Image 1 (tube, rainbow, N blue to C red):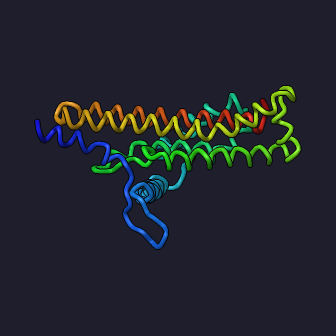
Image 2 (cartoon, rainbow, N blue to C red):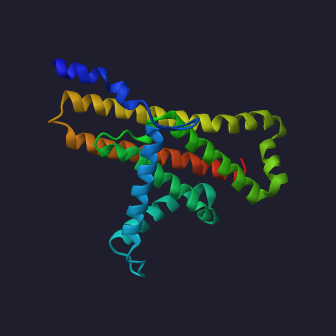
Image 3 (tube, one colour):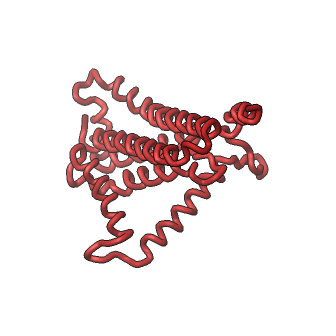
Length: 230
């Protein structure tokens, strides 16, 4: 019992980022290291999945990838139309990257980077900046600026405020859900280590997928607003 109490008392310490190395004024934290590890693993995984090339009749890894692509297309087609599929490089990358970050806690002793507000803030700001750039490319500078006065000019202040709030909303939503999930999973793993490994893993996959889906869905809606109008 004392051991369990001691472990419960250190939960927060295990979820907070810490400095791994300092290079001059630059601090390299555990979140940065973990994110780079995930990216390297993703690169290796992608190379393994695509090493056989792509066949006209998909099978194996190619079939899995095509199912994922079609699912994301299905998410995009209604708000963006068929022409919106050209933004797959944005939405597909967001979904896969966030999902892998979310489920990276399967690695023993690994803290998912999305439990750090700095990671989710970086993802959110990057997404919103890309959305604005895509809006300018789709409508031109004049059309992009005019979009803020839609559907009526009086909405201009509200539309500007909405764009300012979007990255905060994306960042806090993803961080809050993932931090809460990781905390609960860690506590359950300490209290019931023999009974819950498989259910916890399934829960982690489900929640990781849901949070990646929500972030991607919101990004699609923001893209639709900027490229097609309010």
